[in-house]
Image (cartoon, rainbow, N blue to C red; front, side, top):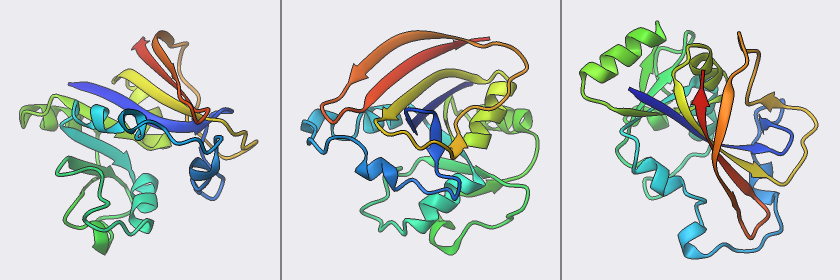
Length: 186
């Protein structure tokens, strides 16, 4: 089963502030509007390629705290699995949108594959790090916001060995964000 990442970071590699805040994503950049075909910086095109999503508990909590209306829900009917060893139930506003999972990731991947899923979107810093350690991520798309946070929650952590990334595409947007797409070679 293919696993890939689509995420935004600060230029210095943080996905959130130390407190988990991501408001800086909305204020970074020069404010220049993007053309309609680039407005979401490729998220909708990416979502059309995946058939399920695996995210961490903290990522789910950020989304839950957004209190999105049904019209604002950007994942459509995508199957979403939330990894948590502490929570057994999703927050009330996400109960019908996510499924909680606690257990071995390789077992989860085998289960999803047996159910016919082919491409998982992996989201959340700790979750992405776990999937990288297990050598399950095959592609990474990072959209760099033009801001230095100085500290926060990093996208990447310690790895057991060097992991080669082959750059396949770089896109500069008019709002000063830059998107990098890599193939991962273990």
